[in-house]
Image 1 (cartoon, rainbow over the protein chains, first blue to last red):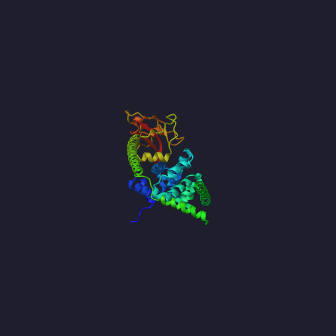
Image 2: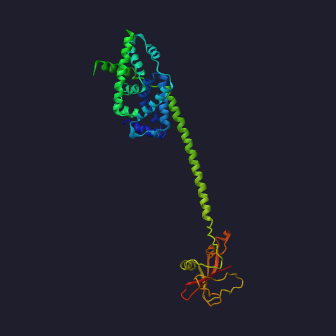
Image 3: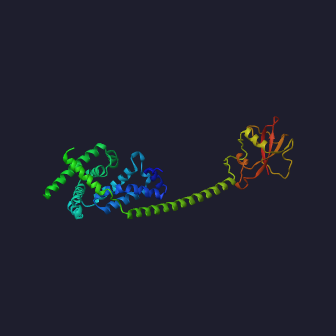
Length: 181
Length: 183
């Protein structure tokens, strides 16, 4: 039997099918969680975003318009709004704090963890509009068109933001390496 | 692609790989499913309330319509003197009268029954006043009491569903010339 599409699951969910809701959640929550985590840098915050995203879906499943993109894209859009709201009301990102958190990994994986931690810190330090473009296109591996639908801007804008975001990342990582030497 | 850009991409790929298996904990799923159950049980309850309210409204509307159906419609009261007749169209009057003819009485004088109380003859043709005292063919018919109102005569709602006797004066061609109501 072929797997039900996200849209089928959404329709069934809207009519009260609990299993369809659970299936849609399990299928899409990972991406939403990672997006929120990479945008916020906090696991509890990412879990909150996931929960609020699916509660919003539950509340108004009819808000989804298939003409405007995929169900997953719609969910990313909700999550993005929640992340933006959260980042707007929280304190500006503190690199020092996250440096310490990233350095807490076990010794055995120190080199790799340090690289990952450094990149995560650098990503979290990007201005929001570059960060979300880099997270969606480079970390979530979303294509430019889908990312443009989530971000509500033109494909060319996404492309230029990704490019600019990578440049900023490179300069930040280089500066970090320079300061370590 | 420059070496710097390649390094950045590799670094980002490493971060993506490190996060690839990360997802929300089971606590989130449990909370969401509980929320889903709560919302849908509430929706079912609301649906039942709406259904019950709609059924009740349907019953009330049905009872009201049934009552309305049983109650005769009150004809518009004419603000003219009873004797002044601008009769209903003759054809219509004839149709009503012919349909209700009980027993034709030819050449019977309308004043024959001493116990009856009658209105004066109301001409159905404008200007045809010379009916009283003539030897004319008269037909006794029974009409719905609501007809009284169309001649400007008083009619109470209490008796609206009843009938009223009337004498209709015919001309030689059998057409109605005048009418009077008898009690």
